[in-house]
Image (cartoon, rainbow, N blue to C red; front, side):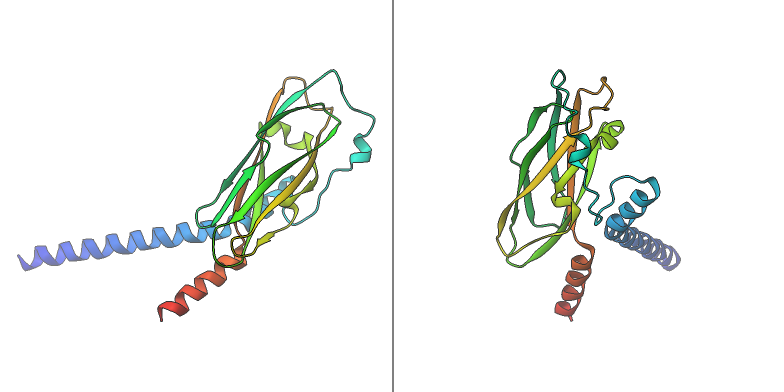
Length: 195
């Protein structure tokens, strides 16, 4: 009986270690998402966070396609752990390729302390990514909100008239996540508090 109990204890200990390693790996992956995204963007040449790769509205000026419209949907998702609410004030709109438009997102910090976040953009279908040009965007830099602060964040954009005709609907999504240095600071605070 003692041998069987020892085997069970070893299996339980091994299972606990595997689960603990899995949790640590998930945390590390979540912590590394923004730097990994930057690396992928640099390698692929797509939109890079932290670099103000603004579209040149002048280059597209005079090329407005008044005969064509594209439906743009706006979306925002807040990553687990970020105590914010982020909502597009305009859910969708019809736009003429080549014309500059502006919409706003409202962000609210629901926590009693200052929080910094980064927005990671995504475009669906992915084939439209190179044709949706952001002139001004809250995703170009990290956003900091004070305790219980709300703010409207602008997004100015233009759809390139070269967008293939088959794409009539485009969705611009943002994933907002806590800035990596803030996540590290919070982890340090919680360790200090527990000691």
